[in-house]
Length: 135
Image: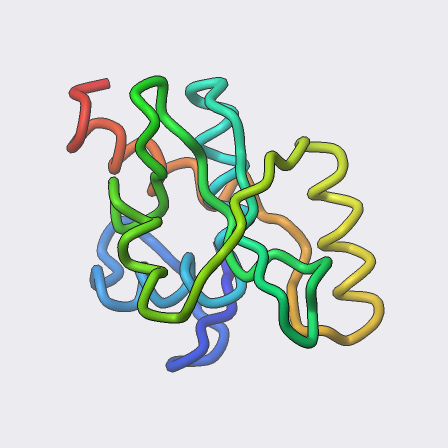
């Protein structure tokens, strides 16, 4: 499935794609697809990382929260610690339908987010869950 990456442009991600490219794709512009895939597989709630800056209503990143309270993204547990280096964020729940509407609205407005590709993210979310939880 094709995804836009910040560092490498648009690429077709496969099981053979390097981890570096996968991390770039699902951290820079496709995190919503990855969070939607994790949510679909687990039912865990999604959260947006919001910051009081020029885009206060646009989450900078989307993650899921595990039953034990860990924030999970493509890099695994600890998304909240990794994102601290970019400043203070407020974690707000995000509903699936609302997220899809926001992403489409921002894409249409040229903000830079791209439409969700949950089907393309599913294999990578399954791989992460298997690695972390044996699911």
